[in-house]
Image 1 (tube, rainbow, N blue to C red):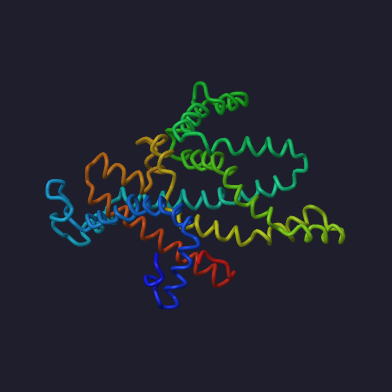
Image 2 (tube, rainbow, N blue to C red; image 1 turned 120 degrees about the horizontal axis):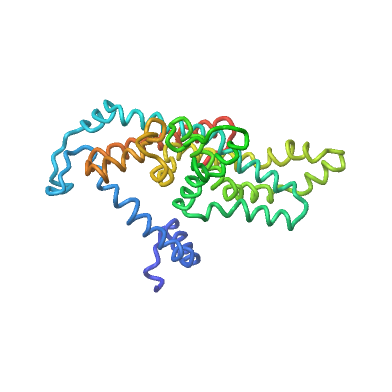
Length: 312
């Protein structure tokens, strides 16, 4: 470009110089921007059907507006309220039991001195993350089978009659949450291991000189040092509080366990895909997104106020 085409405003000149210097980075970023635009932002146009009496023959633009009628129907529906209650229950239990597990694993791995054993153990706990959800569901179904499952086989050793766990509503949540922890805890610990690796080694050296034990160093140095990472991950987790693992639930649940297994995403699936009520499903999905936005904003604000750590 010739000099006469270079912007004369100081800020524009700096912006031009920045793009000229870093253009390779923006080229690498371009595919992700296109992906977000096409698959995340462009579909937002269709959210308006949550406020319309949508007809596939009239299309999105020509379907008549009906305001908040779908939302009134949702909140008057026992099925939706049950799904909302189950979503919060499963999410809170997963947060309480599932969120600390990667942190505990990372702390445990950090204390292992035998590098061969450490790498082997890490590989073993990372592997479930890369297994298909359908295969995970198959493993769960097989493990808890009343005839050939290993869980019932162990129970029989203690004289307990076989239990058909997957058709009992009271057992669905523990099985689902436990499966999720087993599948994701190892892989999620990578973030905390990276944070631990960034702790200044001189802190540990000073603690050794002062006679601190490994337990004391973990509580007084390691945990406080990775606390900002823990808070950031917690905020992200709270933002996804309503995004319960849809794929695993849809494979594992059945009408007998709807009482405790049906969540918002499975409700949307039944309404939109199976029932062809696209406008109602869009209303439920929009409600889900708004609640998630409010949760992440609230968590970020509280964290910023009291711990000075936040996403933005």
